[in-house]
Image 1 (cartoon, rainbow, N blue to C red):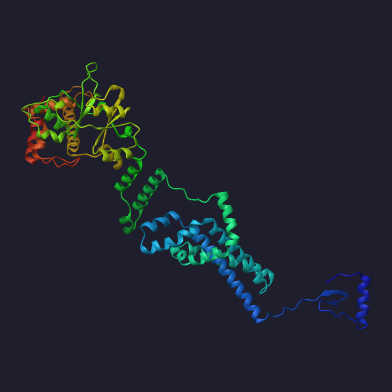
Image 2 (cartoon, rainbow, N blue to C red):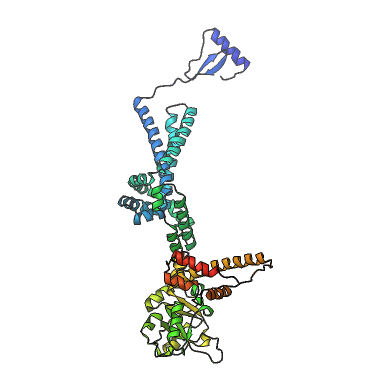
Length: 494
């Protein structure tokens, strides 16, 4: 209603009383005021109605497709897809080969899908406004975009069949990228220039190790039998971690220092006693050094090493010095030599032992001239192929000798504990004061030999009866013999 002055209103009423009125489709007169006439809605022609309905449906489907593909394609990990292309099934390889080229154009794909989504969302209210009132068009537009253009498509395209849907719609995506390229390409190139093209950085060694450990932990916690069977085990985790470690570890990390190396002087006579000693040590390779008159404790003047297995052919009835044997020249490496490179050096040189020193070039030259390694080279220790393999496996390798020694040490400790307990009880029974550290392993062994009649202790009996060869297992001893030994061991007083 249009408000007018009192004079105009009185004049209008007077005209109405005399039979006059206003003829206009836009307004009427009521109580002396001009009232805007309400427009009567006219029915749309059927062709236009179907056109607007089709526009609404097209906008809704376009928005749903663009939103779903944005979430579905951009959430696929290219690394995981590349893994499937390498070791997946034939179907997975085919799907990965079709999707990877699209994902490689990250910014172009992103701009194309977002442009489609924005155009559909902006056009939807325009079509709805021709079908329903404006307020209803806004409500319907927001509802349709939220549920049918965002939530449902995103849930479907990121679900269990994400890869299959992405593969089936990849031709559509290629077509859209081609059609919209004049608009999207400049924007994508600008993003590449500003943000960079590469978005994925490769894993470093620590991240790869952590990834393998996480996979192992997830597989261990899984309750699915199929997943547990396919999960990696602890040994595989250790080996993978070791393989990644040896590329950063150096020779000084795995070497054995010279103070712990068993070596013999070149003047040593290879008689039966020496052969027994070498066999007892159990090493396959033994370094040989030249004695230093000025420093008898210096064992760094190495001249080579001998192979223990070659000593089998020696005649111990006619002893000969070690220097007369064929000594093999080891590799000479720096302490900073990477273990992975050193492993390749071992393979190329067909040897399993290397000398770690500060001047490997000088040391190698002296060994080639049958001269000992001079002091200036500063020999630090030795490293073997077994040391590198232990670093690779992340655990110590025990052979038959090592296991026997470990088992013998375990039995010796058990005997010492029993002996101390027995002596403590006897002293308490006699009223004597018990003090710590009253016995040593040597005392127990000597006492055992006296009670065994000088037979060599319990370990020799174990070897005669047989040893299982597994660490931590009891030796195979007959029960009667074991009972008899126990009686001899603890039988007498004192």
